[in-house]
Length: 262
Image 1 (cartoon, rainbow, N blue to C red):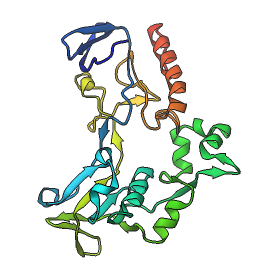
Image 2: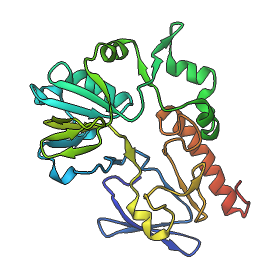
Image 3: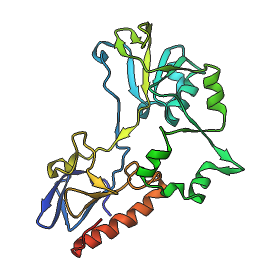
């Protein structure tokens, strides 16, 4: 194991890979697993007028405490757990709205005395492949013990359709009205960030890996770990990544023996 060893470039090296590190050293191997996951790069969507906005824009990754926004007009963007949690906190210190493209959905934290995550394991819903999940679930519900739903129903914070564009002193809402806003907090998720693989041609135009259940569909010997919905609902969680690790290691071993992975 090497620590404090940042990878700068990966190149194909015969049947394997050469890995260049920031300290000038390099490593070689027959197979490579990129396990930097799906939370490496905060994602902020492009919205017209950003260059004119004079207020503060930040991603939830840079959010520390609600007190620093005291007395402000704040818009939180997103409909997931992070967005709702931050908006709920901010509402105690600032006039806060939650801006969403789709309505917030809820899942109970506790069912019949058991935590939701226990039920996901018990029912094996954790193991459902993404193709099945897409037919069952529309959007990702937030896990709630009731406090978030109650707060939003009381408009503290209020829930609004996503704003259409920035204006110099705030935002323009879909109905055409404009409102002064001091700060906008984006809780819009993360994206994989693997620039060290770009020269291999294994990433798509958005920088996401081209893969099938974590195994590269472009380059034999390459696999990924920790991607959202890589093989199941829990692929990017600690309780699910170990199953994917076993799968991709077995797949790479079969490739090294000349067995087609499918």
